[in-house]
Image 1 (cartoon, rainbow, N blue to C red):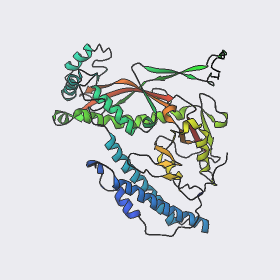
Image 2 (image 1 turned 60 degrees about the vertical axis):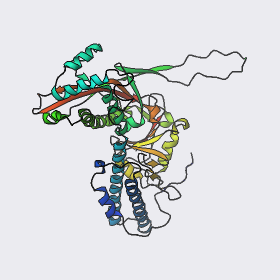
Image 3 (image 1 turned 180 degrees about the vertical axis):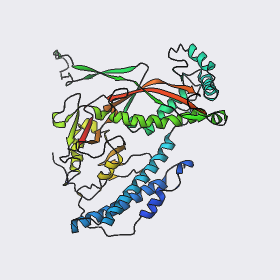
Length: 443
């Protein structure tokens, strides 16, 4: 396979210009804009990100010029580049937070207004749940779940939250859980989800309109099971907060549990071992991509332990991209953590253009070689033998399974004077198409 030469060496040495760093650092540390999100476009955060990236490119070009001229970079230039890199991350984080806050759907508007079609008792359920959360009165919920013939309800297992609240939590998780946001999602009503997959080539053939159809061998199929594991969070509130009629308890509970659930999912979907939690894609068996076999994820080695190659380091990224079949590349993207992304940010192509580019609009991801980058902090740092970069069509490659039903158990005794809300949901996950995801191994 032939690639265009990719190098870290600049074409010419960049001239030193006035640093943008102090202004960028001030913007990265200013007051949180989420207190008053702006409608419409976000020119401020986008401008901050663009300015940070321009300063980063200018300083990195100067650093590379020093390496070319003196065989080493100036220490001050290295420190300046590190500070701009941190400011660039801060500007990106700020833009992401604003975009996520604007993208979160309001309560009761997922799938129609509460009490709409398909949920005739939604208003009654919401009122009964509100009374249970505020005062611990469960008679209304017991009556409703008895009507629904719910076998799993009761004071030991908690009570089902209103459907509007459950849908809101799942919708918000889709915006803040990195792997869930790019993976396939399937809702189930049982304890696990099973699907059949072909382990060999598809049984197909060509035939003329009137020609006989020759008998073919039966397809070789295998079954993959995705069990739903229990995930829990335990937010706490004072009774004074719950007694305040102005407080929207649904919004409070959704806000408290969504972050906790997203953090746990973010780790499990990447490195989970499948024991009492979903199985992450990095816990799958791996094999060199040249010897790929169904049931294993193929990897491309960098040729350097714990690092990119010193010569043309970005070539391995193109090797990774083209290790994926063309049918998967159309909707593919990179997954890595912030520190690995920081190292890749310095790479250029033969024309001196940086491969990493910041988002062009709010809510859009950064891109690497034209493919979107998903930042998942559960991905490993660069180390010998680490699988620190993944590339693939995660919508087809990884499946998240949600069992319907979000339960809450009110506990006013264990942490007095606080009231605990033991909230549980059941979720599973695993690789469903092992040919859709490829890994970069630093070995």
